Image (cartoon, rainbow, N blue to C red; front, side, top):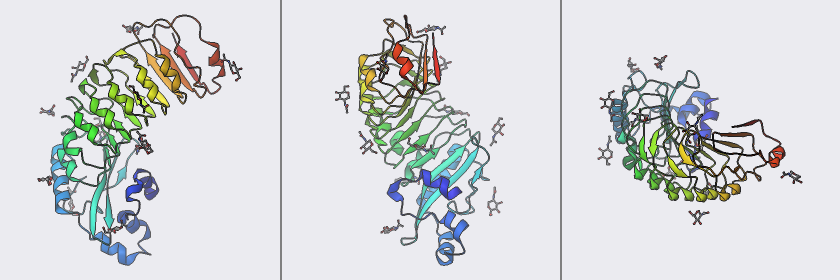
Length: 323
Ligand SMILES: *[C@@H]1O[C@H](CO)[C@@H](O)[C@H](O)[C@H]1NC(C)=O
Ligand SMILES: *[C@@H]1O[C@H](CO)[C@@H](O)[C@H](O)[C@H]1NC(C)=O
Ligand SMILES: *[C@@H]1O[C@H](CO)[C@@H](O)[C@H](O)[C@H]1NC(C)=O
Ligand SMILES: *[C@@H]1O[C@H](CO)[C@@H](O)[C@H](O)[C@H]1NC(C)=O
Ligand SMILES: *[C@@H]1O[C@H](CO)[C@@H](O)[C@H](O)[C@H]1NC(C)=O
Ligand SMILES: *[C@@H]1O[C@H](CO)[C@@H](O)[C@H](O)[C@H]1NC(C)=O
Ligand SMILES: *[C@@H]1O[C@H](CO)[C@@H](O)[C@H](O)[C@H]1NC(C)=O
Ligand SMILES: *[C@@H]1O[C@H](CO)[C@@H](O)[C@H](O)[C@H]1NC(C)=O
Ligand SMILES: *[C@@H]1O[C@H](CO)[C@@H](O)[C@H](O)[C@H]1NC(C)=O
Ligand SMILES: *[C@@H]1O[C@H](CO)[C@@H](O)[C@H](O)[C@H]1NC(C)=O
Ligand SMILES: *[C@@H]1O[C@H](CO)[C@@H](O)[C@H](O)[C@H]1NC(C)=O
């Protein structure tokens, strides 16, 4: 079960790596030689040091990160619920006898520390999920810039400061989830360098300023959420570049209408939720090609007049809510 769940997180890059933890647990009968050897494989001291310092900064209790035992094999793996779970995963190579930390998840443990720049020393780390804690401090993006990070979630913490420009150097990122923090300032142009990004969740923060045109380069985006922020300006025409977009949420911002004609290029949208647009011209957004639409919310967007007939052709529509 766990091995299967884990496979979801592992990128093809290290597909051939062996996860001895799971092998030892599930296949110890068949892999005795390998398994017993692997269980003794230590993490390199620089990675242990980085974990130790990270534990101090994040205030992770020694019951979770117990440095008397091997982090790769002997730390608690637990999923108490969908909101509380803990897991640190290593990738160990039996030929070279080297292990690396590849994934860190500490969700819902009410941690009160600060984000550790020392994660930057875990050179194979591709997954960080610190969802629902009380972690503060700003994102040490400059220190994390050379990590092969694909998923980073800091959802529901107390992260402050601005998003550093250097976040754009973490180019492997596929999913960046910063929702529900206290991050302020403008959305940095550097985000436009994350050309592989698919999910960009920025809702419920204190962002100000306009969406920078550099974001027009994020052509792999499928899911963009920026509800409940003070971002302003017109809905940009370059948004028509986001041709793979499936979900777009922009409720409760200071953005202005109308939707630009280029919005009609986003034919794959299945969920669209926009509210509280100022200064629209009253026109209905150009949605006629979005025949796969399932959820459509246009509330308080200064739209006047009739709902267009083509809505009737959106045969998958489950929610239509507007005013
Ligand atoms: C282990 O490391 C060796 C030497 O770097 C490499 O050739 C091999 O592909 C690695 N094995 C796995 C399973 O990743
Ligand atoms: C991280 O790596 C840098 C450069 O190699 C080193 O100076 C520093 O001591 C390392 N930090 C930890 C916590 O291992
Ligand atoms: C850490 O592991 C050692 C060895 O198993 C154990 O004796 C000790 O009680 C553990 N410490 C904590 C805080 O769980
Ligand atoms: C975190 O705090 C909440 C509220 O105080 C509590 O219900 C929950 O059990 C705590 N979670 C953990 C893992 O300690
Ligand atoms: C983080 O919170 C602690 C108190 O929990 C506080 O002392 C510290 O100044 C805060 N740091 C930042 C950067 O907000
Ligand atoms: C990691 O990011 C990818 C790309 O957005 C996403 O499909 C996947 O569900 C994420 N994994 C987890 C465990 O959140
Ligand atoms: C974020 O905005 C809210 C509401 O405007 C405000 O109460 C809060 O102090 C702001 N937080 C930061 C970190 O700027
Ligand atoms: C988008 O994703 C594809 C497939 O993962 C990748 O080949 C490409 O380099 C990515 N970036 C852009 C800008 O298309
Ligand atoms: C994206 O939009 C810009 C305008 O901001 C345009 O010049 C550029 O060609 C577009 N790029 C792609 C890949 O569609
Ligand atoms: C509608 O949106 C405007 C901003 O565009 C806001 O000032 C107003 O409070 C919103 N009205 C409601 C009923 O939410
Ligand atoms: C709905 O679809 C039908 C069949 O494809 C087409 O003839 C009709 O023009 C469409 N209606 C609107 C209002 O777009």
